[in-house]
Each structure stands twice: as C-alpha cells, then as structure tokens.
Amino acid sequence: RDNNLEALKMVEKTLNEMRKGGIYDHIGYGFHRYSTDEQWLVPHFEKMLYDNALLAFAYIEAFQATEKSQYKETAEEIFAYVMRDMISPEGAFYSAEDADSEGEEGKFYTWQTKDLDAVLNPEEMKLYTSIYNINKGGNYLEESTRNYTGKNIPHLTENLSSLAEKKNLSLEELKEKLETIRIKVFQSREKRIRPHLDDKILTDWNGLIIAALAKGGYVFNEKKYVDVAEKAMKFILENLKDEKGNLLHRFRENSAEIGAYIDDYSFLIWALLELHEATFDIYYLKQASNLIDIQINQFWDDHIGGFYFTSKDGEDLITRQKEIYDGAIPSGNSVSMLNLLRLSQITGDQEYEKKADVISRVFAESVRNNPSAHAFLMIAVDFAVGPTYSLVISGDTRKEDTIKLLESIRKEFLPNKTLLHRATEQDLPPIDEIADYVVFFDKYLDKATAYVCINKTCKPPTNDIERMIEYLNPGRN
Image 1 (tube, rainbow, N blue to C red):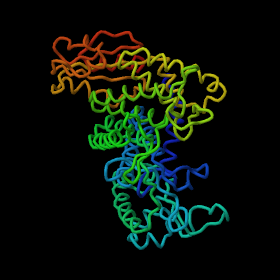
Image 2: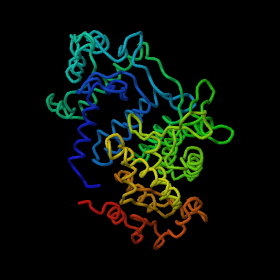
Image 3: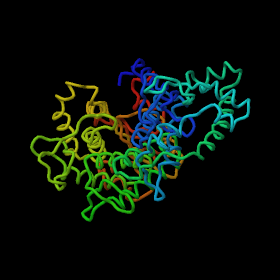
Image 4: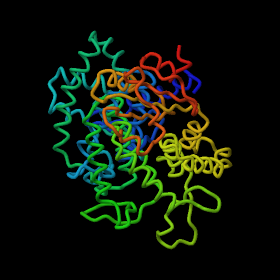
C-alpha cells in the first residue's frame, strides 16, 4: 500500500530466518509446526498441511514483491514435500505427520555424526557438517535436562551466498555440492521408521494447499502445480458433498462424514478463486459462486451479520459461535470477507460486497481491541478500502499478443486485484455468463486489450504492456 521498505525488511527477515532454522526440514523440505526457541532452531517436529500451505503463500508473495529467487525456491520445496509425502493416491492431501517415531520426538529428523559418516565421504562430511552446524556433541540442548545429547538438527546460521564466498566457491557450485549430499542423506533417512501419518482428508486444509498450489503454478508459470491443484479440487467436489450439494468436512477410509464448517466453505472458495485465476476456467468461478450462496444460506447470521462456525442444519447446539480470531489459520469470517469482495468485483453482484461490509462492521470492535489477532481480516479490509484493481484481458487465447499481456502480470505483486480473461475467439466467451459487464470489453484496434479499472473507474483500454503495468502500479518508480 505505502511501498514501506521497513515493513518489507521485517517480512524478509522472518522468512529468511525461518528458512535457515531447524524449523525447516533441510533434508526432505517442508516446515515443522513451530519453534520452541527464538532462534528457530528446535522445532516441535510435527508437520501440518495448513502450515505448509500458508507458508508457501507467504514465500510466493515475497517472490512477487522482491523478485528474489530464494523465496521461489522455498515455495517449490514446500510443494515438493507435500506432493511427495502428503498426497493420497486419489490426489487429495492428508492432514499431518506426527513429531515422534519409535516413541521419541524428532528421531526421524535428527542426526548423530556417526549416522552421516556412514553415508558421506570425508570431503562431503566436512562440507555438510560445517554448513549445517553439525558436531559430535550435538547442536541443541535437550528440553528437559538442558544438556547436549550428541544429536543434531541441520540448520544454517548464515546465508548460502556468504558461506560460498568463505569456501571460495560460487553460489551455484556450493548449491550443487549440497544437493548431491542432501540426496544421499535423504535416501538414508528414508530407511528409518517414519512418523505416523494422519491420513484424514479435510476439506478446509485441502482448500488451503489447493489455493497455494494454484497461486504458485500461476506465478511461477508451472503447470504441474496447477494440475495437482485441479486434481485435488476434483476429488473434494466429487467426494465431499452430501446429496443436497452441501460440503462435508472429512474423508477417511473411503467414507465422507461430518457436515462442513465455515472454514470448509471459505477455504475451498478461496482455492476455487485461485484456480480460476490460474486457468481461466469458468467452471471454478461457477463453483465458487454456488458454494458462497450455500454458505450464506447455511451460516449467515440474519440478525447481526457475520458467519457462524456451524451451519443451521448442523448439530443442535445451545449457542452457535462465530470465529474471528486469525491464529495458526485465518478465521472463516476473515477469508469469507475477502472471498465476497473478490466475487463481487468479478461478478458485479453488489450483495456480496454488502455482506463483506457487514462482516467488517460486526467485528470492528474486536479488531480495535487486538489488531494483531485479526491479520487476515485486515487483508480483507485493505481490499475493501482500496485501491482495488479489476483487470480484464480481452483477446484471442491462441494469439501471441494475448499471451504476452497475460504473461506480463504473473510476477506482479498486486494482492488487491481480480483478473479475468475474455476469450474473443469464441462467439460467446464463457466469462460473459458470470460477469456480464465484460461484454463491453472487446478487443481494441483488433489487438489483445487490457481493461484496468481502479475502484470501479476504468482507464482507457490499452494494447501496450508497459501502459497496463503503469495503470496497475501508479506509484512505482
């Protein structure tokens, strides 16, 4: 909003320190649940699907905001982990991996020097132990005794670029050597007894990882992530609905059970919106609109406003609660507010925007009392306050000029935008069905054309990429 470099510096500091620390699995990738110390060194070793989904989002957006490749690499490593270890044969995602194996927390993830000696040659051993701070006595204190145990958690205390310089290697040379070693250590670790896998497939957590994969696939222009996201979404929509079309919460052992909660709807709608932006398949917008209408019918408080956590057709409760606290995962109300604003801007349906406005007012006092506990809600409020950008690219999908316009915005960090593509090679472009105002957004001068509207006021149509980017980044130097 303000091009605040100090704020960006704070974000980067946190993301970089987390990536270097023991909270990150430097061997198999992915983040553990949380750190038990301020150095990010000793984690609680459990791995949660939702943590990795939301952190992938953070690193993707950091890449967009800075164009620094390490953030892209981290997001892609997270995806590599969940696509390897957390995915079901049907393509949906499991919930978590436990912290312990063989009755000991972290046993799968920690190393004694003798373990590494058994798989690495002396040169590799010297490099790996120096880079990842591994020693014979161990590199962390056991929590209860505060003694070293001879066990090590691989972690970095410096950036790889500075470590490469100290070892008279280029960054690429060091990365290549470390990757060779990592594969050896990973293969050795795979022979260990793994932590227990929580194989529940949850609609809400799948929504988060689908959204992250779709976002990553779009930003990185990597179809494989979008394909995985689409397959997971297909599974959820086909297997986690009841006979009335309402969502269900959990799938396990070939059985879908438990009526959905607000998080199931809000997170899955978020994923559908990200999938539409990644594919421009109108199917995902239709599904998002249908589900948000069901959500409003089933969860909306008609007296005060805001969404209840449980549906009106759910179990009989003395009182129905509303969740607004954005903690380890954002609240359903926070995500729903942003979903409503995005869908209103896409479809032109003002009722969605009115509902979003009510959410902001209902929970305003809670936000004033504790702003940091409502971080995601403030993202939605920021979208509502604006400036918000509506971008429609009108052009033939197969033509080079259309492709270039669409490609040019992939890496732009524009969180407060919606993006539509009007495929003019079709007599009735599918997007016209759900966003009828775009019928007026045709090609200009018979070329692919960008229509940029800021706070519902539209700029002149343009065929020029630089002009389009200028519209979208009016304050950029």
